[in-house]
Image (cartoon, rainbow, N blue to C red; front, side, top):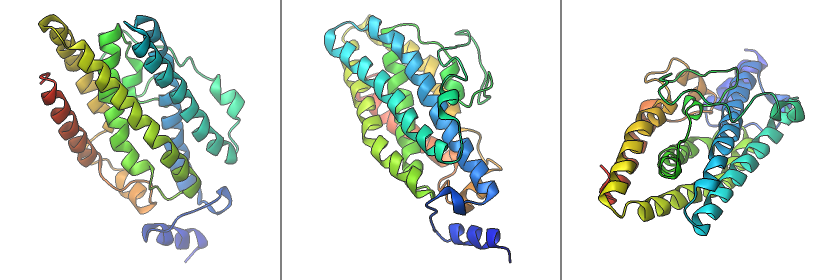
Length: 251
């Protein structure tokens, strides 16, 4: 049995890797894809949310929008630094794409990535106002929290440690979003606007979990880069969102 296969057996049994030097080629490809998707999504998310700063109805909301915009860029930088350990030109990477680029509001691209970068499809849609920004943040932020249950225990230890540092701040973004949403839905008109935004963003965020019965899942699980299937993560997200929206009378 080759050294590579020995490492794969080790990973399948719950082992972890600690440096680029002992990473098998196929594992490296999947790890880089995972990191690229996260970095690109955080950069696109930060760029897309930046406009909401000037839509904020008050100073408290403006501070929250600034914090989310800043910290998402910081999270991208932290993961990009790990990519740099694998030889990525981090300076060039940051300017490789227009992170603020968006498609039309009526576009429907499902799970398909667009434009050459690796952002999740949801980050190709534009935000149109403060209520829309808050709703997008709570739905996608909750999805990120669900994904963090995978990312904080993946088998490449330096990256897992970065995600463990990031996770509490991502969780705080969600709570800031729900605090903002609670302040928004004080009238029937505001609640109707929020429900319209939920109807728009819910299927687009759901698509970010990928397809059910993904053919790549078994390989990623064997490598310790995934633990729960897409459909299980989606079900967890739906349950969390249903509970929070019901509490706000937004179902």
